Length: 216
Ligand SMILES: [Zn+2]
Picture 1 (cartoon, helix red, strand yellow):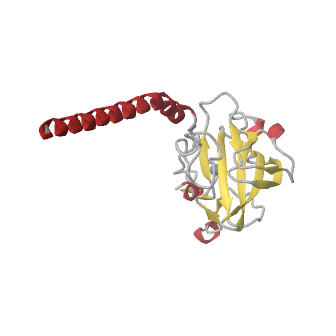
Picture 2 (picture 1 turned 60 degrees about the vertical axis):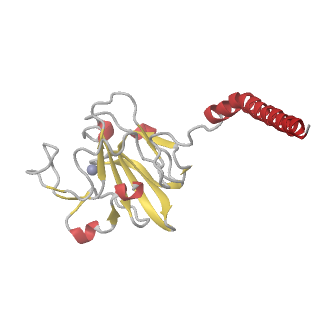
Picture 3 (picture 1 turned 30 degrees about the vertical axis):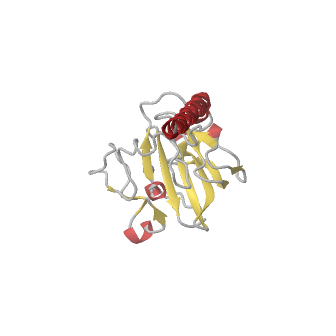
């Protein structure tokens, strides 16, 4: 009799256990589709592959990949320059980003929130704009050169980070003052308006910073 009682208790425990396991499995199965849906549809990518994880967005598409001729601080002469023929001698204050192979409009973007403090046609550049922004709480002048003059914004206009400001000028045209299609992009570590693309000494060059340091 005692043995039968133990057997019945064991049997009941077994049935209870089986039922619990069945319920858990059933619950997981009904939740599964929901879980899958949440993970695939409601977590959109917060940034495009073009958007770096720093506080700044790139000034132009394929910024790093297209710095193929004149990086920041390169010292060029008419003899050694990677761009021929060369009319300049000196240390490069900016970074050149090359787009001669692209025939559609190439937009340039505000790398951070800022205000236009210069916008004009300049000999040697074509269209130029300077955006004043803050980097680590100090003002910097961000120069974009060789732009289409008709696309330039007015002085005083403000832009949010990532907003399009203008487009590059056409290859070897009056828009770029005869230059190949590229962006000259430089960062002056104060809010002066300085259009120099080259300087003659390293001490002069120390007023500019390498744009790539913003994207590490
Ligand atoms: Zn340049």
